[in-house]
Length: 400
Ligand SMILES: Nc1ncnc2c1ncn2[C@@H]1O[C@H](COP(=O)(O)OP(=O)(O)O)[C@@H](O)[C@H]1O
Ligand SMILES: CC(=O)OP(=O)(O)O
Ligand SMILES: [Mg+2]
Image 1: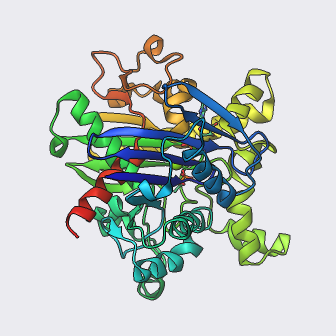
Image 2: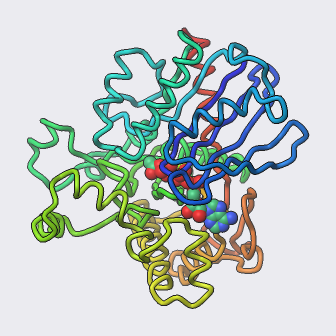
């Protein structure tokens, strides 16, 4: 059985084609910098060589079409016909309170995903485009949705309720949902597997830091809190999202800038974060380069970025009365070692000691980066949302 996984992020589309019978990954790659200058598709070819194909990708639909054409391409492809694909697993970002686990994407489910779109405007529309593109290409193919919100459904009310009138929760489901759940679930389990410890006995903090970023607190195998909220805009400073901000600032800005709800949503989701603060690119590689040149505003932006991550780690250690394992993942968490160092340093109060030399320059590998005497084991675990999505898809189809 061949399962194609599409993972549409806000700035990226990752894909993997799995042969579930042999367990092999037949094709994999991803488009980065969607909507930015210099977008490209990075793929691993048949001989295991990395290939970069530059192409203007203004939005997700064009990206999905490009990926699909490459899959059957004479040079880079690995299948002759799309009909060889048996099923598709999709990352779906917002599932609200409706989905605590993965499901077959029926018309009814898709209607709910559409309903949740206004709460994840950078993501759900992209996920829906991926689903529609596959249905158009292979009509009737089974498609499964794996929700970012599902893993966080175990949070207690004290973590997910906002201090707003209760009626707003009853009427509209205004509460914290949390995102990147598939990644938090994968890396927390994988960390325990690597360390040979029992998942259900650990206090784990997972830092998924990419273009979007969130921190989760996982206690005894269950998520108990996470930094993203009703929407993926809360919490950390992100590529183009503001993260935590005084709610009182919102009506003030709307009035002063003459913005309606859509204008405000655009401001906090697309024009804020790193891009808004620095007044330039949302990509952390560009920010790093500007910091190296001594750009004062870039330095301030990176300070805000790192400080937010540190505060959430401290908060979740407090929430769990300690932390056994801290896991870094996501494009930034896996690669940007300087952010890992700055955040993890001066955390001796909670028994965290990072091995600065081991961490330095380390990118994209599974590795423990704390010292042997650190009470908290700090690790890097590259995320594999696609693997989780493929196994959920297989399980759902097997039980159909
Ligand atoms: N080698 C690297 N060094 C520093 N930052 C990197 C590196 N590779 C990717 N990143 C950063 O990771 C972010 C993208 O993360 P990713 O998790 O792929 O995004 P998304 O949230 O769209 O899924 C970008 O800000 C990018 O600059
Ligand atoms: C939910 C979210 O922010 O996803 P991403 O990091 O892929 O943009
Ligand atoms: Mg992502």
